[in-house]
Length: 314
Image (cartoon, rainbow, N blue to C red; front, side):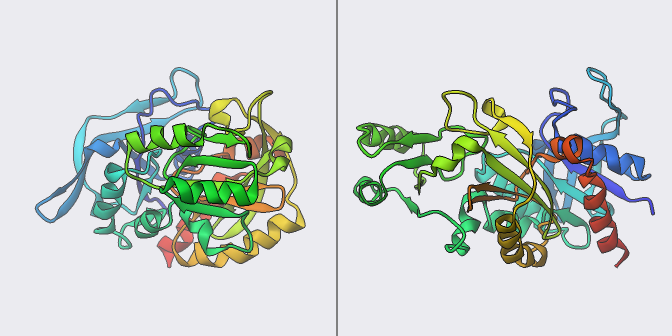
């Protein structure tokens, strides 16, 4: 089976070929005989009833500094493709949301991964709210006094932007920390969105586990350990990936959330688990598959393509 695959992603030039999950997915697709096309989100358009993108035929190779080559630039009708990957990184802003609306118009005839309707409706820090028994105490609010009341009840907390990513803007506030009002003022000056506050989990010092699910089933995990002096474990900010096994609790969490992810077309998902608690369900642009492959030898990209190919055959 040879499929026509389009990747909607951030610029391919600067990516780290040893860490980027989109690159690994493209590499595996090419090895399976699929043809690749690449464009950036700003090149997506709705044009008189057609969903189009201006981009390039793509070839990838695992050579640092020479990891891709492009064919002649062209405008394509995305309804003529078998699969479109929605793979640009957040921020999950109106630009991002608009791309999901446009891609909705060709899905599911063209399979968009992950399903854009549910990516839009299940952003990372909101989908977990459907599973309060799996998550630490959590509040989403904009009102300062409401946030103060939550911290008064729970002590040390984590405060972060509701639609942030990569560990940006994440603060640990001890119960006696006097900076809550200042941070609230800072965030309020940037946007009109609520903030998310969660009870601080001391277990984060031992790592923030990224569990990878393919079509609702867990395929493995990596542990991300914060750098010295850091609360955040994101690899973007110096977190160190380590080999780790799935625990019974991890499997329990996956068993509860997996059926919903599968039903809603979320084929490639990364969840974050600290200690025994689920903190995020990442559906927009999850990563971690290259680290998992190095640690465990698990070819997650192959499993992803097997799930996609099964849908296309069906």
